[in-house]
Every structure is written in structure tokens, then in C-alpha cells.
Image (cartoon, rainbow, N blue to C red; front, top):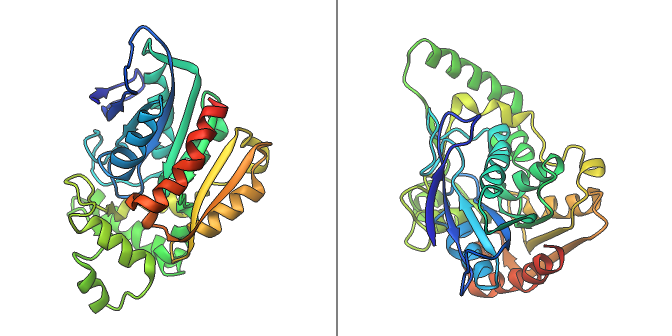
Length: 308
């Protein structure tokens, strides 16, 4: 593995990434390459990097796991911005970097997105034609979440609060950053959380199971409004034509990845598309638990081999 940082000509900050190389890597050859995108509030050292990137690299792919702008080790100020437009643009920035590397085959670049990174991967591929194949693992449409459970089914009221906070910050008041998860599962339950997804997210991100210094699960309130009006699947019936492999678990929770997976498979214009259901497993099981991850990889590996 090699840790890199790069800045393209149109950028004002650096993107940080880890490049995972296949066994017996030869810099004189060219390789199919996969961009691995982390979940919302996550970082490249978590599931996108230390699980899926490692596994795909072992199968002969170069895999680049990157931190989103304003998050992780990447640049951008203020911190903890979760803006879908920037998140999608990051994919173009990564592709721009990859095509400068002599060992990357520019005609064989694919993408894998986990959770919110899955929705971003789908949206990016619609207009980034250098991406030739799209895979997602428990991919979620962040815009739908922001119009639903993430704003307690009151998107207009939430945007009013965001607008007031942005005005306050423009006048010099302190930034308001939301912690998206409780400090522990016990505290989440004590606060009345009962749904599977936020409880399992807390178990992953707030314990030694998945906790990493840059996996902060924080979001700047004043910059959240753009996501409310965004839709990861907009125009998928026309623009999403690349081969598509969508992996979901059938133990559903409030974040709705199962629903989103079924929807995008139905809507995508892709002639080659497949829904893989990991029966008996949940959204966060697919982040790192060996058995469901094996189910995902059993289809993703041949999918990328066939289409890259």
C-alpha cells in the first residue's frame, strides 16, 4: 500500500488516498483499477479501505481508497462538510489523478461505494464516462435520507434551522457540528434509539471494531441543506448505462439501503445489472463481518473481472 496526496489544477486543497496494489505488482504493466468510496462520516481506513480495497487488490486490481474533501486526511475548510456535489466531484478528481499513473489502464477504471459512498458512486458514474463499471455495498441515497429520517420527516423545518445557522456563522458565530452517533450503544438506547441501523452504526464506529481517528461521523449543520434537494438516482433511467452490481442485506433498518438497492436496479438504464441479497445480514454486517463480506465479494470480484 502507498499513501498519496494530490491536487488537480482546478482544486484548492489536497485529496488523501491509499493505493492498494495487487500481489507481484509490476510498475511496467497496466492494471484494472477500482475507486473505493467510504460511507458518510467514515474515512479511507475503515470498510472502503481495510476490508474491500484489501480484498479486491488481492484479486489483481489496483484499488484507491480516498478521503472525501473536507473529511479525513483530505483538505478543505471548514471541516465536516457533507455536500453531495463535492462528494461526486471528488470521483472526477480521483480519476484525473489515476489517468496520470502509468500503471493504471484508463479504459478499465471502476468504482465501489459503501453506504452513502454507494449513492455517490452511482451518481458520479452517470456523468463520469471514464468509470466503466459500478459496484455498491449497502449503498444508500443520501438525498432521500435527508428528506426523510435524517431530518425527522421535516425537511423544510430542518432547512430553516440550517439557514439560520448559516446566517449566524456568516456573522462570526461558532460553527455548529452535529455528532451523528451517540458515544456508545448503551447511550443510544438510553436516548430512545431502537432501530437496527443507528445502533449497529454506533457499534461499528464507536468501538474497537471499526473506530478510526478520522472516522468522525460529524456533519456541519450550516452546509447540510444542499443534500436535502439532491437525489443520487436522478436521471438513472437515461444516464446510468455502465454495468451495475448492487449488494444489500435483507435485515432492513432506518437507513433504507435495501430499498435503495431495489430501486436503482429497477431504474438504471444499464443492460447488465444485478442485485445481490445477503440473506440474514444487515447494513453494518456488510461493512466488516467475514461471512456477509464474503457473500458480497463472491459476486463483486467476478463482476469487476468481467467488466474491467
